[in-house]
Amino acid sequence: MISKKAKYAIKALKVLTEEYGKGPVLISYISAKENIPKKFLEAILLELRNHGILQSQKGKGGGYLLRVDPARVNLAQVLRVIDGPIAPTPCVSFNFYVKCDDCNDEVTCMLRPIMERVRDANLGVYENTTLLTFQNLGSLETKEVAIGTNGSDLHDASSTRMTA
Image (cartoon, rainbow, N blue to C red; front, side, top):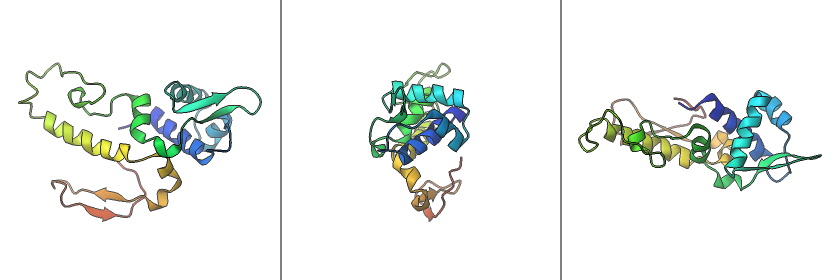
């Protein structure tokens, strides 16, 4: 599950994507448009700026804007900045690996292969979803997997809902 902070970050980046190429956007505009508390938004935007996703301009006509083309920013990057590891357990994380305290041997661990599959499924969505996706949500295609299948029985679903 992503945090409320990450959800707000994504909403703010959606607005900045819509305004890409038009100049800096005021925090108050983003806050009002997406119903995000202004103080909380300030901290989120600062964090995204410190990680190179945004840039800011001070003074009259100032605000925040995307530092890079929105097609080059994916959700995995944003979630790692805001929430940290994407992996469900630290022993399967690519960028934040830590051996589990309660595990004697990762090779024989029964849970680790499942957590690797969960990580890979999530990363597949996060890494292939750029900020441009939010401009074209009507054409977003999702795949549904029935519980108990191995994933080979995928079927298309024309859904724009983001669940789980």
